[in-house]
Length: 49
Image (cartoon, rainbow, N blue to C red; front, side, top):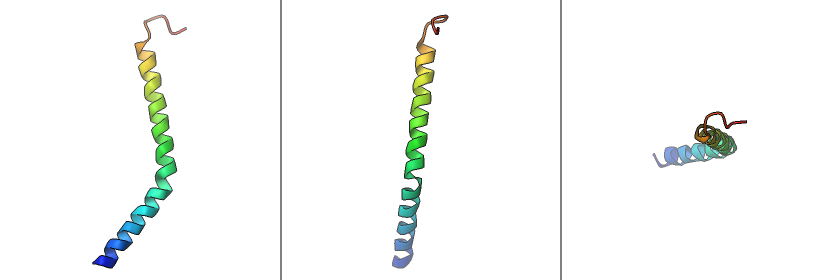
């Protein structure tokens, strides 16, 4: 059971290391998109240009 636990931890570490860059990139895209939507929705009507 200890060996299985260590193996699971190693797989989790490898998965986290593999997806860290992708997760951060997606996070930045979501934040940028959310900020754009927030800024766009907060603009008065007809004042976007």
